[in-house]
Image (cartoon, rainbow, N blue to C red; front, side, top):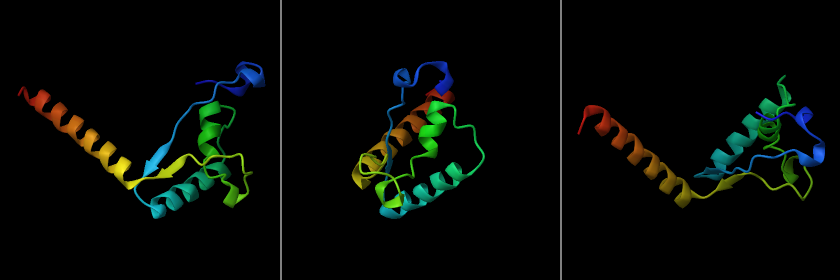
Length: 99
């Protein structure tokens, strides 16, 4: 896992990610959880850890307008991803049973 100290600041590679949730309430719950993580004593010198710790930092929560929130409310995409994941789990169970 890359640290900020590993290379010059302009060369740091950020992890591209989004979190898809089915409802605004789920988004708010996660924003609160990420804010709690941010306010905890964690080593934010690790780039991905720092990114996750700042997911909560939206314009509504003190961030600037250039910050894109990484938590997307999209029930259809969430359901589709959940379905795909359930299919994988069921296929793995069948494979394990030898079917």
